[in-house]
Image (tube, rainbow, N blue to C red; front, side, top):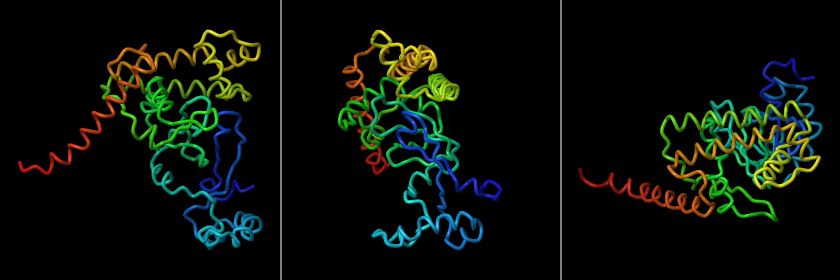
Length: 282
């Protein structure tokens, strides 16, 4: 094994794709030598160097992408933007780009995300809480479009245009507390029941909300995932987030969108007018 080599833990990292999050994790690890030159890899990690040399180099040298052939020892998807954004963070928020259910999870900063994950370089559970609420999910469904029959989450359309509430510190603290509770609950139940998937849990949650009868399989998921508890956390989160926006929690989807579109428009006008104001003589 490579575990005894000093510093190697920074270069053999867990790698997650969408299915690892929605279904069962494959527990894949990748060799990630980002930031290291060829000679440095060979000198510091000779066993890793030989492994990559024997298996990757010949295919990479003939690759049409000059960067890939020139830096043949590096992981194909370096994704420098997210790497730079994650510096100093212990975790970040991720969601699967195309998914039946829209949920947001915290990933440890050691995890290298696949390009089909949408990653947000924020470690505050307040943001996870707001994004996990019915208000944001309604916004994302309306603005993100679909692939086949599954909703897509487009970061520039769904996240960057989303107007977060002007929450008080007390409101933020409550949403933060519920965001942590949501993330911890799902992780705890999945750790206790390795066959439990997030898709399974949210399928059952959807049935609970609709008042549909649960099948025998659903009942096992409900028991293992403690899905009634999951529902209660989500309901509390929806109430807390609606409170931060100053609107009732039981608004229709259409009324929620109307409120968010108006808020987005107002915030856009503020951003447009600010530079203009600064240019005016005092």
